[in-house]
Image 1 (cartoon, rainbow, N blue to C red):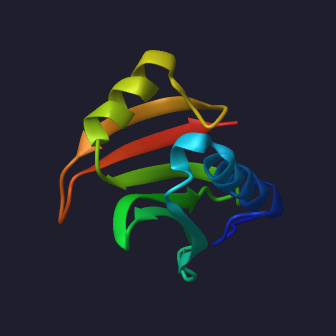
Image 2 (cartoon, rainbow, N blue to C red):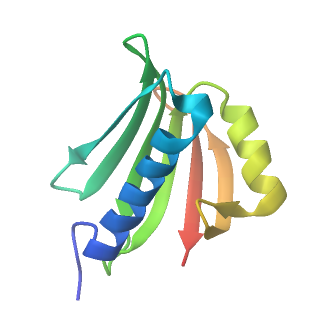
Length: 115
């Protein structure tokens, strides 16, 4: 079966990630928003901003079965995110199968996961 959206488990994982940011003291001064970024492609966004300026945006993409297949990170400190994830090959408790720094309209970290 092909899903063009994230399934219930994947949306719960994103909600858990959002709550993790909200409950982490270092992010107390940040605004955290979670929303559907592109309903046609099933992409969900988690946006972290401070003083009205975006710091990082995580875009979660579904695989053909509705699970999170990959996510992209945009914004600040991309090299730091990349290095931290490369050292553990884990992201938000999920195993990373592939990670790369990419350039396009803006730079981003491209992360493929498996859980």
